[in-house]
Length: 237
Ligand code: UDP
Image (cartoon, rainbow, N blue to C red):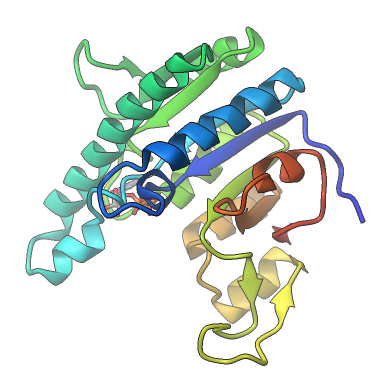
């Protein structure tokens, strides 16, 4: 079965993808293969924006568990997304992919400030906005930033690459009878308090009817399959 092929997507690049299978912050093989896929899908005519996470460097909630304040922890988390965006954009440049980093938080001359119209101009020229700094607000996550930017940039679908196949009605690691869920509506997702996307993000997606695909980006070729409209991962709509 096929889904509609999207013309414009926003892909959330989590910190977990950047660290890949390595013990370090960046996995050269993983990011290289990711950049090749991005090149391939842009050559197919798909317009792509990348919203970058920071979990390979730090997550606010983890710092809070160590007894640090949530606000400075989240501020540091947002800075981590900027560090990752600068690195990822540089990686894309190696593949001659036109891209530009935009940050929700002003960081002087290092990175351009995010203005939706400027990101849209770049998309229309065939370039890739690399979106840094999350929403620019503490107590949010990059999942919510990804939905917010998807709405602003008028994409067809927000695509979240993870380490898991998508959504299950239980924990497949602990419960072998857990069933995979290929499609779920926003309200059922919220009622069941599933965890692959945060609640604020799904609530906002529901309000503005932004479909979401959660899929395993660690499996070779999956990103290309998703943009070709193949039914992999979980579709939240
Ligand atoms: N963060 C934030 N506001 C945002 C986005 C991110 O405060 O709008 C902080 C938060 O502490 C988060 C960290 O930045 O834990 C890194 O983002 P996230 O955990 O979403 O990264 P990912 O899991 O996608 O790598």
